[in-house]
Structures are given as structure tokens and as C-alpha cells.
Amino acid sequence: AQKITQTQPGMFVQEKEAVTLDCTYDTSDQSYGLFWYKQPSSGEMIFLIYQGSYDEQNATEGRYSLNFQKARKSANLVISASQLGDSAMYFCAMREMSTDDKIIFGKGTRLHILP
Amino acid sequence: DAMVIQNPRYQVTQFGKPVTLSCSQTLNHNVMYWYQQKSSQAPKLLFHYYDKDFNNEADTPDNFQSRRPNTSFCFLDIRSPGLGDAAMYLCATSRGRGGDEAFFGQGTRLTVV
Image (cartoon, rainbow over all chains, first blue to last red; front, side, top):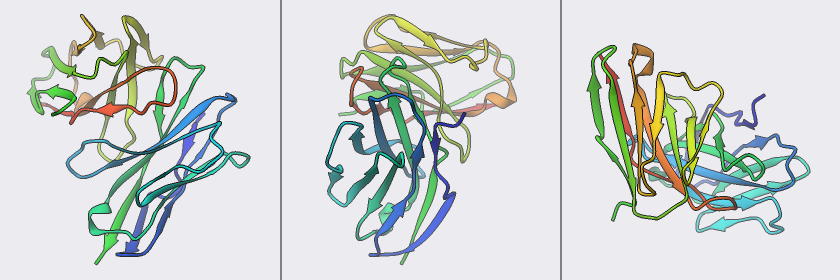
């Protein structure tokens, strides 16, 4: 069963607009962590932001914020004031604390920022 | 200043010829991961180590093996590469259980000819 679902294969957004990338997850663990990574065309995976299941506040890192809705099992990434350099593949990932440190990725969303 | 280093960045191997990809880390992290990523797909976890404890994913083919001789190094061995094994191979590390993110190397792009 797919544990991480990213329903947007691709998105086009005008530069300077905010963008929301969707992520839903499935777990029966009470303790888990959610991550977002950016993968530019060079191939490296760049960590963006982390949200723990017990964190009451939504995580923020600069222009990135994570809209965590635990009851809905959703962890959407919000990028404010998008820039051309934000064009990349974005992956949502999860670690369930009961499963030996595995980090599992969703299928990703390709984001295109238009000038 | 690279903390997770993968060598080589690009590897071309012949069909059926064993190949080894290497990963080293300067972070002293407990966990090391190997992922396979094919074009426009999600990284797929092949296996991971917590210290010397090896964890193989159920659907990882037997053709793929791994070694972790010490904390700093981890190797991915492909015993008989097939055309379907052409992919980007990503190594990552993390401190261990908890909320720590995984740090990735730049990947090795494997071509099978």
C-alpha cells in the first residue's frame, strides 16, 4: 500500500506567487516524521523541512512552511514568493519510528516556475 | 565540505559485469541508506544499515548486495547488472531514530551497456 501520496505530477506557477505542493500519508504509527526534499536537475536531494507527528506548530524554514493537518494525514509544502530557482522535483517523505529508520518517498511533484 | 560522498558520479558498466558503487560520510551517522532512482520516479529504498545491522527491503533483488565495513563507508554491489538496473543510485545517512533528516550524496548515475 502506498504510504505517501503526491497527487500533482506537475505544476506551473508564476514567479513570485506562492505555491502549495500536496502530500498525504498513511500510517498507523503514533510517532513519525515527515520531510520535504527538493531535487534539481543535477540530481542531488536537498532537505527542505521537517515536521514531527507530535509537533504542535507547523514547521517553517525561510520561504518554506509545512501545513500539517494531522487528522487529515496531510503535510503540504508551501513555498512563498516563488523564484525561478525553485523549479525542481519535490518529494514528500516519511519515517515511521517503529520501522527501523526507513525513509519512504512519494512519487514527487515537478514544479516549474514561469518568469 | 561534502559530508556524504559518492564515487564515482558516473559509472558505465557492461551487461553482466559486476560493479561496485561507494559511499562515504564524515558525519559519523549511525544509519546509511541506498536508494535506486529511475528517471522521473521516486527514490526506492534498497536497504539500510543501523550501525552494522543490515535491513534489506523485501523487494530488493538478490542481484544487489551491500557492505558496510565501518561507520564511514558503505558499498553497493551489483553482481550481474542488467539493462533495467540503469538508474541513479543515492546514498544517504542519518543519525538514527527520531526526527533527523537524511543527508544525501550527489548520487552515482549508472549506465549499463
